[in-house]
Amino acid sequence: MSSLSSLLRPLDFGGVWDEMTMVGSKNNQYTFCNLIRRGSAERKTMDAKIEIDGAGRRSAANACTEPCAIERGMRIVGGKWTGSILWHVKDGPVRFNDLARMIGGASKKMITERLRQLEDQGLVRREVCDTAPITIVYEITDFGRTALGFLDELRKWSEGLPKSLTAEKR
Image 1 (cartoon, rainbow, N blue to C red):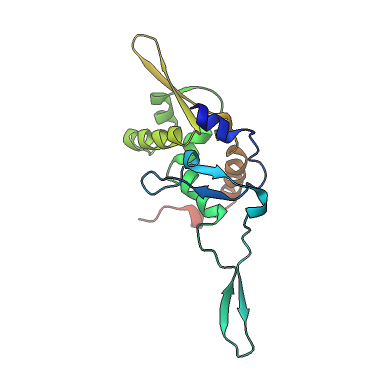
Image 2: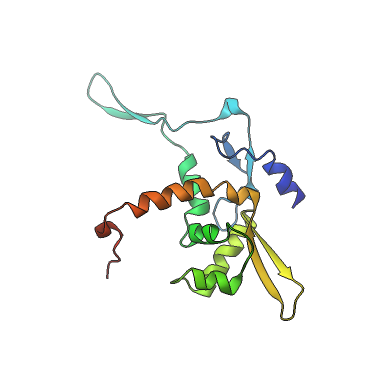
């Protein structure tokens, strides 16, 4: 865990991150543990455009050749129930069964899978308490807190959506 800590210091995730390069993968998904920071001179921006030449032919300029910053972020926190789990552990340690009760509609198996992913990515910490019976609690890490800002903005945005867009299709 110390290598993860040194990788994530200083915690400067509120702004734009420098370009990150994949140095490993787990189940073909980006994880924060597998990303390394590179110099700001190498940072790429999302400025792809369509250009039209003199003959009217269209071509892409500055096309994305790899997943953009938004796609990389969505691969980490965009999984089903992932944002909800992060949101519900933000206020302090939460026992697994309490978390399952708070997230209605998600199976315990799904919650377990997402918690393992979040733990692997360094967003959530799992602690086994020495009690009888054994209790397992989850809490958000400092690194995981960096995602709360945009999750709150997403919550506000989705609360303002028309019901017709958010109604379940049957």
